[in-house]
Image 1 (tube, rainbow, N blue to C red):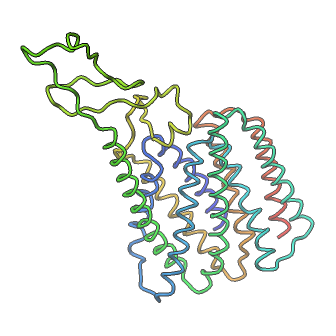
Image 2 (cartoon, rainbow, N blue to C red):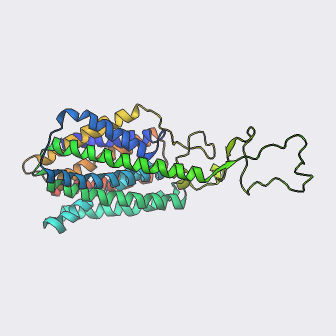
Image 3 (cartoon, one colour):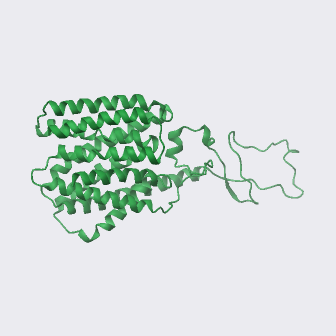
Length: 350
């Protein structure tokens, strides 16, 4: 089950990357999670109030991990992101030693060393991917995603012992959907407030018999770097106050969700339906269900399951290289082999 979960998770990452080409981060997450919750609707059941509080905390961890991970996915190539995400089992094992008192053998320590070496080399080979600031910002967001993802994995082992897998998945998805809905609402309100600050009324054209501006020695005033849009008499207009897209940093373009037509000032504020969102929802539903059921098995080890599940980065890397035609594949491929070798050593030593 853990192996099948890894395959579905790798395909899920590729589908997310495709879905982000038409919609923003929060929109993709909200719709995919809502659809996943809808798929799980027949399995909902009630439970103790304390369980809801535990699952609410898990929902917060997962939401932060997803949002930061998808922002990083927009700023960095998917081949780079897949390698960073592949380091998550390493930190799960390390924290398992600290929290649960587990002991590592020489194979596990060797696996951790190889994985950390792969991460170091990745930082060097990714220098050609985008601007310096975009890379730095992307790595920061991916770091947040990895930390919260590791915390969520460790928390899973704690809560799954007293709950059924489908109960955990159903209510966690519902809580995540609610949190994402609030995030989208706040984003929309913030965008509306920002747009209202840029709202201007275009001056009315001179009427017959009125003095011309040139005669009044009052040249038309247009703020520097802006251009007023032509319109009818007294009609409200927007002034373009943003720099041309080509002159803006990569991370600024991404964060503002500029549309594919590259028109300055336009954004993907309006949701566009994409059937890829259904694919994303189906893949994450299946991957999570297999993960929770494998974690519930008697004698299941979180460290082993996490390592196997993170092997999904191999699927993501291969499909990312084929579908998105990303560069630096030879160097990244060597990093991925080092990461895979580390994962194998961790698996064999567990």
